[in-house]
Image 1 (tube, rainbow, N blue to C red):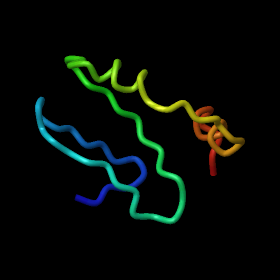
Image 2: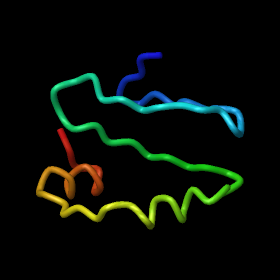
Image 3: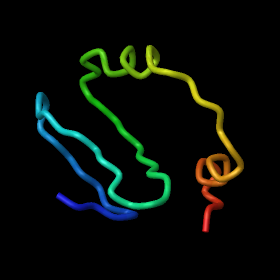
Length: 64
């Protein structure tokens, strides 16, 4: 299902899903999982990446 800036998507626990960027720019998402079900551990075990100026603006809520 297509989503856009400002949309929210809530899934039932155990739902299998994939977030795919179909645009030409970076995709930023805020993901919360409750109960945790090892989600935090999955994120912590992922590859660390450096944040660029655009990323920092998005995180600070100052992106255009």
